Amino acid sequence: ATAMSEAANGLPAPWTVRYSKSKKREYFFNPETKASQWEEPEGTDHGLLKQYLAEHPVRVRCLHILCKHSDSRRPASHRSEHITISKAEAIEELQEIQRRLESGESFESLAKERSDCSSYKRGGDLGFFGKGEMQGSFEKAAFALKVGETSGVVETESGVHLIKRVQ
Ligand SMILES: O=C(N[C@H](Cc1nc2ccccc2[nH]1)C(=O)O)c1cc2ccccc2s1
Image (cartoon, rainbow, N blue to C red; front, top):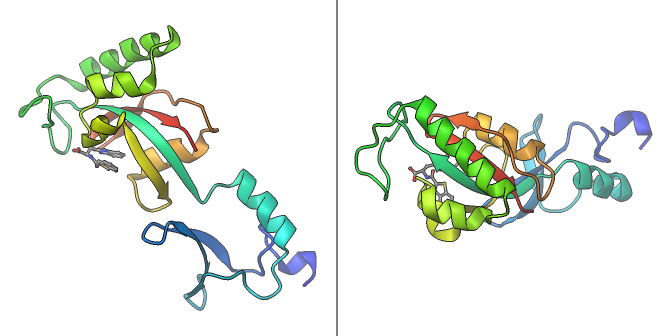
């Protein structure tokens, strides 16, 4: 196919790449016909697809530290059955954690110490996730990170987060 008929992803338009959480691998989806398949569609430019995927991850793996507050959707966690700190106080706590990260403490140890998410047990590790699985503001921040990079304070309905992309 000519370059015109392929999106920048090497796939014949309008095919896109998605991530299957259950099968833990990429699959191909045609939003017009709603067709989905494991193998690359007919006419795919394999080299362009590989290059595209290197720059546009279909899935990322992140650690995060969540500080819930009184306005959180579920203001409770293993740390407290009734979380009452304000959003401003939660942000201040994350800023103190940012300082401890910058002075060399590990993200995992800080997640175990402070995160209000049940992933604290695994050093904040959420595993791999694709688009459409996490709350929008979290997804947007996570997919904008390079591997090894840590976000600033990210707000979701659950509270306020620091996110570190590891894969
Ligand atoms: O939603 C979860 N936990 C919630 C808090 C929370 N809210 C989040 C919003 C976005 C990303 C992670 C988030 N974690 C809770 O414990 O109240 C998850 C826990 C875990 C544990 C392991 C892997 C994925 C997940 S997602």
